[in-house]
Image (cartoon, rainbow, N blue to C red; front, side, top):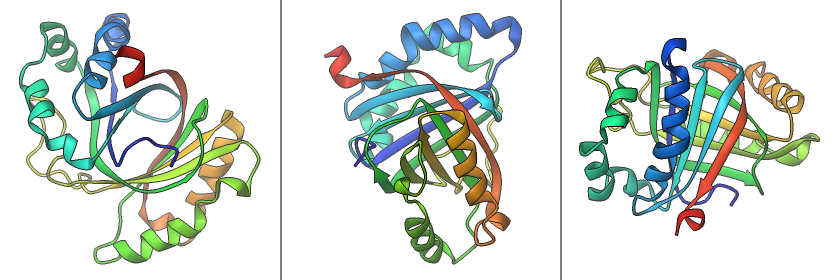
Length: 221
């Protein structure tokens, strides 16, 4: 399975240009390593948008989904550093998905990530999952490394800001993740799926993101 573990935390946000250098410094010098050090976290990847919004995206893999509601993770959230608090307060347009990895085909990670956010119709989860499982074939096109589906937990998927809404219609959304070698194959794969009549009515947004860097537990142990 190309994505290590069974759980995934997805975060995406914009930040004002005046604070962007500090935001990137915090992510690169503290935040990613701090999160991967939490018990049960396996790896993290950080991206910047080639075509999409919000501008920044991070993926954190965990050994199990339950890690994302574990005492260790909750303790980390409750004891943010001063640097973290300052930067989190500046997030805009934040998306936070606490998700289960339910489909994962292929081996390896790409330099570019295609992403599609979908909102399943009520009662149609099993059919959608089966349809996606059949459609997500990384061998169907050159430049596609692996393809995955993560399904948000609607209770846990809330932004970590004071302005977070108590009711978020997107908290139960799913994300299709497409690992590709370059922007063109990622865009082509995204378009093929978003143009598919079976998925088109459920598509909320899509985009492509370039990998900035990644870190695994083995890098810090």
